Image 1 (cartoon, rainbow, N blue to C red):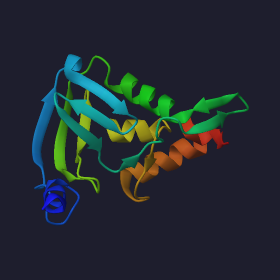
Image 2 (image 1 turned 30 degrees about the vertical axis):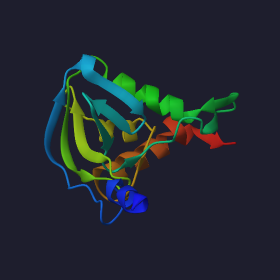
Image 3 (image 1 turned 180 degrees about the horizontal axis):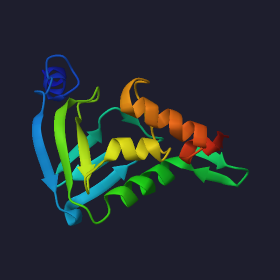
Length: 151
């Protein structure tokens, strides 16, 4: 019985699948929290930025010969800089593979996913489209993680 309760409570399990999300969520600057380079918390809702993957905190890399650097923390800071002082609006588009809401978000009229990929602190999950083109440009210009070498 206990296993059944856990199975039903797990949003990633087939039987306990949380319903898909849709709609718009908006938060004033003082209620937006940057969780990591690809995740925001608006009020009490954690939203994964759709279509991108940022390095996790603690992922070390070396930026142009410098000492080891936490690229995940740098990606988180880059995202914080993008949203700082702006109202954030996210159009929720379902859930990611771990059950978290995901969406396309803007801050100050800027597409956050596109901006963080263009800055080189996240990669596009699919090579096609605007995110793929932004990643290719960031990579060619050696921005963000693209100027780094893994340790």
